[in-house]
Image 1: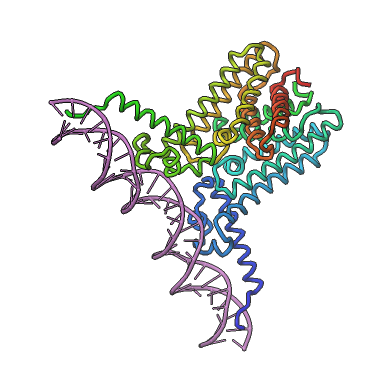
Image 2: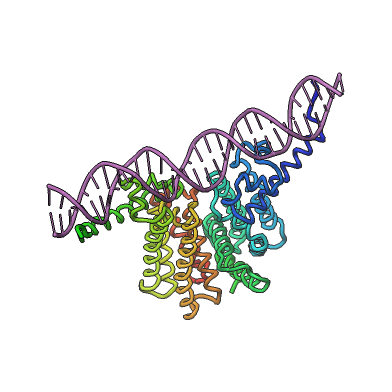
Length: 205
Length: 205
DNA sequence: CGAAGGTCTGAACAGTGGTTCACTTGTTGT
DNA sequence: ACAACAAGTGAACCACTGTTCAGACCTTCG
């Protein structure tokens, strides 16, 4: 033999793959899935179309990877807040909604891509899974709230799904506009209040 | 002159157009926008591809017409219930949610196509308008509720958007399954209760 | 009936975008 | 330096669909 893949080469490959996924994410966040053609993504990553297929067996596989990373990050953050932030379940729910909303407003493009933008089948399937995970983490905290009497009896899955849909709808809708500082704060406050009412918390007048 | 379009011919044309729109709606409801190619729609309507272009200047125009009709019907029904059904605003809201939910569950395919299924740009734009109209009719009844003191102060647009998103999320999610009689009734009841809580109505324990 | 002008057809066309592959370039070990 | 082989390239290929259009067929009216 006269050639064997060296660690240096491997890490260069890994870095290239990493870079590709990151750039693809940017393209998706800025222009949506529809404009994230293999050509466009390859160009953004500064590599040839052919090279993309050295890292992913198909465009769909790359799209799924992009979606999984971004959505996984979001779910993780939310789950952490809902589980480990201090306070009773209702306080944690409020905090979670606040974080969800703020993050989505800061990265509007990405939020839209994850929650609503038209996408190919493979990504659409991932999106269902993503929403299911969101629902599960919300449902858990609602269950806790019911258990300790701070929330009234209810089907936690229905309420959790509703929260996911409600927040997504409010945030993704372009009528809410770019939402500068003040308007954004107002929106977040209204969202939190609405979510607490939705779960049946008594605090929100 | 030797030929002029006769009323009989015109009504035959109108009927054909009508038939085309109806069949296209069926295709969309059953297979989603993605599978509603011009070829498939023409076949379903029993006409040639070319004839489709006698009625609509493009595939997008046909898709928009299909969407407008179906969505317009739904909004109309909901608006009527929210405005004209008897009772105070809270009762009307509950009734409206019940109707929205039942209709969506009865025509799951259509509901999914209207609310969530991936669609081309032109339809996506219509969908935003559709959701805006839903929001407006919900917001109106919420405003009334606030005005007569049955609902607490809140941003009606935020709550209305949330209701649209929440109900859509709960209904469209395939995990809720085909929802046979009993499960369906449970789901509707939970949805109504959740919606009333969401708007801040006091009745819902 | 026959001319005029419409309606209907579906194969051919054209744009798009994912995928491939013969080739060039780069890297490794002798 | 050179052989061996992997990585990188991008034009060509291919499948898929929306759209067109020349000709077939129908309807009207003198």
